[in-house]
Amino acid sequence: MMGDRSANNELRREVGVAGAILLGLGSIVGTGVFVSFGVAAGVTGPSVILAVALAAAVASFNGLSSAQLAANHPVSGGTYEYGYRWLNPTLGFLAGWMFLCAKAASAATAALGCSGYLLEFVGGQPKGGATLPAVLIVVVVTSLLCFGIRRSNQVNAVVVAVTLGALTVFVIAGVIHLSEEGLHHFTPFWRHNEDRSAPTLFLEATALMFVAFTGYGRIATLSEEVHDPKRTIPRAIVATLFISALLYGSVSAIAVGVLGPDRLVIAIESHVAPLQLAAGQFSSATITAVIAFGAITAMLGVLLNLLLGLSRVVLAMGRRTDLPHGFSRVSAATHSPVAATIAVGLVVAAICLVGNVATTWSFSALTVLVYYALTNAAALRLSDEERFYPRWVSWLGLGSCLSLAFFISWIFWIYGAILLFAGLLSRQLSQRFSGKNDSSGTA
Image (cartoon, rainbow, N blue to C red; front, side, top):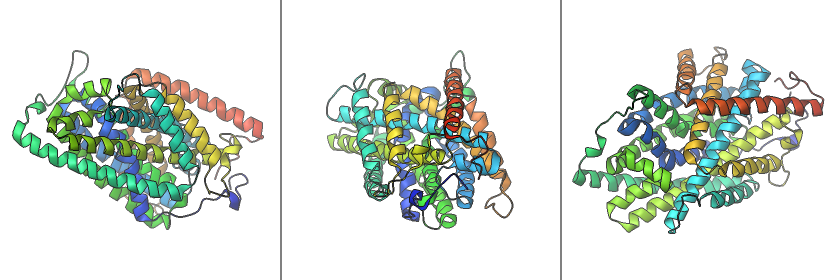
């Protein structure tokens, strides 16, 4: 058993299949399709469309591994908990720490993207001016989450509906536009440069787009709060990945066809609002406004769900004193881990000060690939009775995550190594002050 986890520290099961799918979509359909898509397009050109498809396939392997693990061990914490149970305490901690690093960077990207679209919508100048509004957005969403998951789910449902509606309008208008203007932006289809080959750039873009599909992890990290986890979790993850892959593929094809990859990169560097720039080609102020509003709500939804998932991992790590034990407390009034939520909000707000979505997203890509490699390693340790899917699914997930990680720029490996050392040091200090050792928290 973990520490002194009492009934007052338990989370209530309030989420069904539909709610879990909405949580997954709210985490996936946002930053990847509205912002970071332009980063990946700048790397590999029009072939980013295929990178989206390959990233979705890799995410599917990881999603099935996550589903098996979460259904067999339905508590908050995701691969942090699975690592403790099926691997060892050190790998479990590293998974939790990688998750915190990866998703904190993703959350900052979402906040910066939301700020960029908002400022562009009201006629501001996002470049260099999106940082402070992003910090304020993080503060507001963090405050909302402190009121508990039920209120957050209600907001999330509205956000997902608005986002899907806006993207549907974009796709329909884009098909009409391409039928009139042609498909010349799709050539040359593969991009290369003097230093790197087309396959290398393509796989880097795939690694960047993989992060855009990992919102299904919110379903697993919330498994302590869903009804009938063995039924709800697998169904919700599979449905979420299918819907998001279909949507991402459609939107990516339209965006590349309308603007071309070079203009998408310019949008990222100067506006942080690439789809709004694409919508501007449709000669309809109404469509442009709809896309801007949909992007803003989508980014808010992603930020909400990322902060929600991060706070649950901090909660789990606090229970084992891998982080200070005070983070394990759950409010009796709101049934929410308020201390963990506030701490996460402060960290994400600080990362927003970087102010560069390409940097935050690339760092997130590396750390999330390492995290899901550990997820698949844990899934390989499941017994035949615990396993829902063939073992090769987890092997493919493990191999693809490790392979794609090596296509991320070396500078992010250095950042990752530094943060990894910092995490291990903080764990030692936390456990020393609590009087517990490395093995005290094993499940």
